[in-house]
Image (cartoon, rainbow, N blue to C red; front, side, top):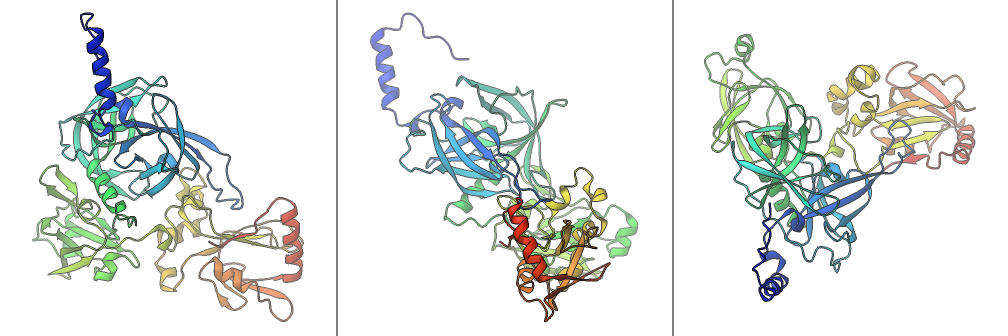
Length: 499
């Protein structure tokens, strides 16, 4: 609470203090919610993965960003996902300026914004935050918020533990602070900076009102993100590219040949084209240590400041793309070591994209037949429990893509649905079938399909071969072209998206 100024303070002294503050550079002033936070207003418009030519209705989203040096504003990537417009708003005056995205990483759930106009003055009187990297268990932090009227709201929370946990996307985990404390909801509460000793300690990710616990995106991950951005070309966090299993079960330890060995995790799967595959890791290997850090049977190692952490932090928190890590393992009951050069596998490098933001799904429509490249967001459009509700063959392909990767496919093209048109008579009930060839040409991506459909056979027909029933169908190119023009007239204004 700010104390009132005593009545004995003279007018001269008050004026002098005001002049001193006015003449003090913003960077030298003390950080505070009303001086270091920025309201961020975004308009989002998501893509439709079932009707890929459509987009959803625009929706607003509002949050708070942390002002950093260089008039950059840090927010969670979730705040600006699929954004069509972003603006920065002064917390007190309400002055606004359009903003652009400098860098974003949906896996790390971080984005950096800046005013589009470099001469914009909206941020000039505000105080940039510096990072505090020293948070540990039992530390006290503050969650900063701003009321609609510009007043500051601070909430004290205590760090229960430091762990590795999910940020925004399934399957991606990073360092988090787990804290306890009751938070008050405010109008700008989508993204909230978290402070320690006047410096940025993290960004709030989630809040459980029943248990009054929160997860906070940790400052060391923010530091790595900002360091990567600093050279003007964002690379991202590296991937090892393996799936593991704990080795608590004695039968599994005997199977893996590590009965007399302490700790270790079993490599269940090695991703195609991953850092691990390129270095020679194999399914069935047992990882015992990474860079000299012993890995226990649960997949943890002992961090000097945080205690037990999942060993993924050694890759996604303690290293960067291009670094080499040493992996000690057991293979066929024999100890060995591998040098693994860390790379990043971007979502577009996967056969089936694990996530897709800021662009629509690739598709092609011909004669009423709708073809797409399979993605996890398409399967997720089937709602909760999509693993059991979405078409089984497509879910199976998403879970076990190795067969198609070995065939040399870049993407998995499938027939998603068939509109009733003169070109598709008899085929109306087809759907969810993987495409193998069209007009004798192998289909490795949607661009291949587009090229193949420009070359019908001598009878003016397209021969489409599928992985399953009905195996082969034929469609008339001339009729399909007529139908395509009719589809455009009736509202499908874009028949393909190839990039």
